[in-house]
Image (tube, rainbow, N blue to C red):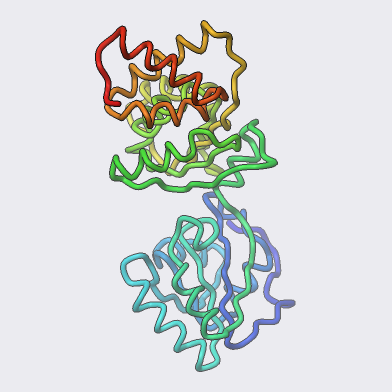
Length: 297
């Protein structure tokens, strides 16, 4: 049962205003009193999934009408919502969980409302990315939120290669069905970095698995089924100080693991990765190329 709080007496809801309301990512009591006020007093709630939002509204005895607004109808929905705003109504936009438009529907609605000069007001609250970052033990002063990666392998790897040399903590969202594949890709391209996987955050069966990527991979392989959306954080790139012998060994390993791409591309990536001059790396790579199986130049 919800806490016995009065939440509907102090808010001033403005007409012709779109409120972007963050909702719980799991635990239904992780919501602000202001958010409850807004949801209770606006004319309409535009929800990613009305069935999910209805659970929250029922918990807090809120009876505001709902309208479906998701990825597949956002164009139509946006036009309807703009029309309602023009008629003087106030609207709250919510996603299934967390903050709308952050890897969730709502961008088009917000964009059109701003273009039409309607007031757009944020009502902040939970976010899976910030929740996971706060307990990850990884540097949190600077980070990159990537969210969901493309499903197609080519596009996915292109983005990961762009992120490989970022010194910032990286934050990814992934479905439980694809989390092992993501870990495999990260280990292949990034190495075995420190990481944390957050699953079912704020819920009864919340888990935070910390360690190296290989530790999380081992944990995932032991699970028969992984449930709940996953938030994966990994540490940023740290340049190494290498001896000549270490550098030669790393260049050999890198070339062996990237035989599918031209050497020029590998040299470019290794220059950033190892913090050495392009000339030095290219000289070692050429020597290795001459002594071993031919590579694409």
